[in-house]
Each structure stands twice: as C-alpha cells, then as structure tokens.
Length: 195
Image: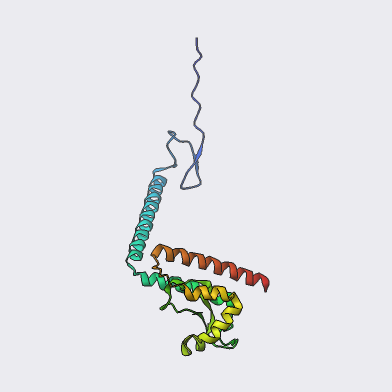
C-alpha cells in the first residue's frame, strides 16, 4: 500500500514588475496582481514595438544604401584611404619637402583619372602639400625622384607600367574602406603610445 503524499506548497516568487514576493496560484504566474500584469503586458508590447521599429529602420537604411551610386561609395572609400595616407606620412610634402604648408593632401603619383587601378595603392599615394598637388599638377618630377628614394626604382617602374584597368564593386569598396579605417586606428594608437 502506497502512502499518500501531500503536494508541496508553492514557493514564493518575486514579481517581475514590482519587488513584492507572492505565492503563485500556478507555475506560470509571474506577477503578483492584475495591475502588475497590465504593466508587464505594456512593457512587452513596447519592447516588441521598439524591436519592429529598429528592424524597419535597418531595412530602410539598407534600401537607401542600395540606391546610392557607386561614386558615393568610391568617395567614401577615397576619404578613408586619404586619411590613412596623411596620418602615415605626416606633414611633409613628397615633392618639395615642405613642412610648413597650411594643408596636406594625399597626392597620387599616377592620377586617379589616368590609372584608377592604383587609386588605393599605398605606393602610388603620399602626403603632398596642396600647392604641389593642385597648382603644380602634382609636381611629378620631384615626386618621382622622392618616390624612387622611398620605395625603389623597381616598384616605381611597376606603377608606371601597370595599365590593367580595374572596376571596383561596392563590396570591394566596403572592404577597402573598412581595412583603411582599421589601419588608421592602429596607426593613431601607435602614435599616441610613442608620444
């Protein structure tokens, strides 16, 4: 003959809305009163609504980004690349050696119009004062001499003879931009630690 066991009394639970402890009527009860139940339902509804709004904003931003032309992504990537080049080379012009110019650009040895495949090539781009880059059309003669001293004749010749065109895709541009942003962060941290 088996002995009849008494059911264990329910353990007190903490209400999910207020700090009160209560004895639940069943195992699924999570609030102490109908008022707390209404508050919990409102909180869950608000949380769900915020999640849906966030997803809608993300979808809208993706649709907006998909309609932007390739030139937008090209200029964004060029900006990140140029920031890295200026941080890497500092305030010194590769063409004239000036250290006192007001602004410095990331000047390309072979222009982006003539050799777009070298647009994001670190050998092809160096810090250059705005006067040399804009008013002297890159001041290419002294630029070449300094570039040979910096990277060597073989690499300069490789730049000058490579005429294979390359059309960048948005995915490539995104990857290049991310890579140069990361490189810039690392470079800035190194410069801060060195100072």
